[in-house]
Length: 97
Image (cartoon, rainbow, N blue to C red; front, side, top):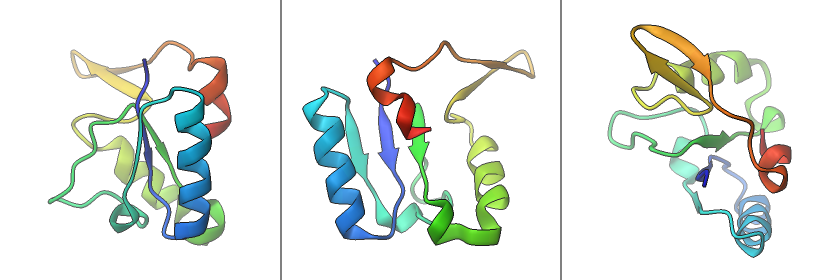
């Protein structure tokens, strides 16, 4: 099962997304503190990180890159220094990409 980190600053949107994913049985947590990217004090161990392009604007590419640089890189895994895509997400979680 995939786990999802909701990295949104907007509390209202985050709550709605969290409730909907929970209803689908997807393990999820929300952390608004990482809405602008991962922090040293809060490394994510989730498989999927949900961010908002509307909130990040022109920083979206930089924030996505910062998440990919994490030791536990969401939606990617490292193997012998090479990246390989993980298996497809379950249908219920695909819209979270």
